[in-house]
Amino acid sequence: MSKLFVGVDVSKDSFSATGLDVKGDVRFSLSLTMDKTGFSELMKAITSNCKDLSAVMAGMESTGCYHINLFSFLSSKEINAVVINPLLISNFAKLSLRKTKTDKKDSLTIARFILIHKDSIEQFSISQDIRDFRDIARERESISHLIASTKNEIKRILQSIFPELESVCNVFTATMLLFLKEFPSARFIRASKAKVVADALERYGKGRKVSISADEIIRTAKNSIASISLAKELILPRKISTLLHLMEQLDQITGILSELCASLAIEEMEIITSIDGIGDTTGAMFLAEVGDIQNFSSHKSLIAFAGMDPTVFQSGKFQGTSRISKRGNRHLRRIVYLMTIGVIRCNAFFKAYFLKRKQDGLPFRKAVMATAHKLIRVIFAMLSHKSHFHVKENSL
Image (cartoon, rainbow, N blue to C red):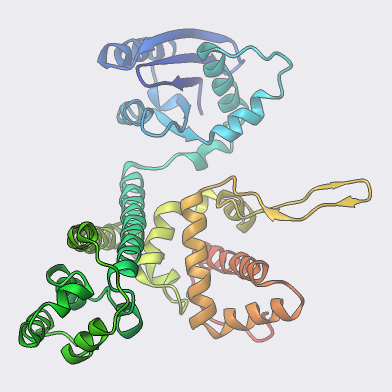
């Protein structure tokens, strides 16, 4: 049972900490520097008020990267440290009529929040292994965003210097990317001998399936309406080099993610991927964001954690438009969306549910969201009961 509750308000170079006992009385209130000296001073204050560090609960708001070192330090001392959604603290602070805002006041608010919610706050605590798992998953997501952005830039450049190429082949195969590094425009291809172009395509396509012939590329280039831009011809190969590097990084980080998932959540992974339409990668990323399913009291709390719970605007006879709150974990929300699209395409049960909701009059996006809620309910039940996916009759 926790006996000391420590609220910490973190900034880049300093932090404030307030400790409360079980009665809510302030035991210490400090302003410290974000360095080894400050960490040591905090530990002195904690140990002087509670010798048993396992009976200490410390909480701080998520502040990008600034809270990580202090959080790791406290966790290494076997203190129950939690990171709390700033929105929860903000809403809690609004309960006070006083509007004074200082770092010490903020740390006191956090400490009071922890004291009041001590019985349910365990869901905010995750192990170092799960934090690493989540960091790897989010790094993969970040690389995926960079890849998508780079591809869009390449498409934009090709639209000027070889606009017809996309209509005759997939420009993002390894063969075509390597080919375009050497021949970055229709002008380059027209200016080259046919044998040189054919040899390059054969060289880059060796061991791979090539969907377009050299003759077709040459013919398309000769009939192209492309503009001449030396700058874009210079930029495109560099963009392609960046894309190839990012794709290599994505493969490496995906491998690491799979290894972590196998070591931390192999049973959960087998359960979640028993649903047709959920692959290893999306399944691993879902588990990385969710952590232990026992941290959630019901599927509703999991839906709220993802920020996919509905918000209703109603006053008297006025009924506003219902939307999802988007107040939860945006990474998890994106993964659930990708999983939902996957099961609608590949899983007969969820596809039938999606079509049923559309027949009920829901527009496409709301039908997808309804299916996402259904998917979360199913996954929550499966992980809670350690059971694989199977369809019961009349279960829609």
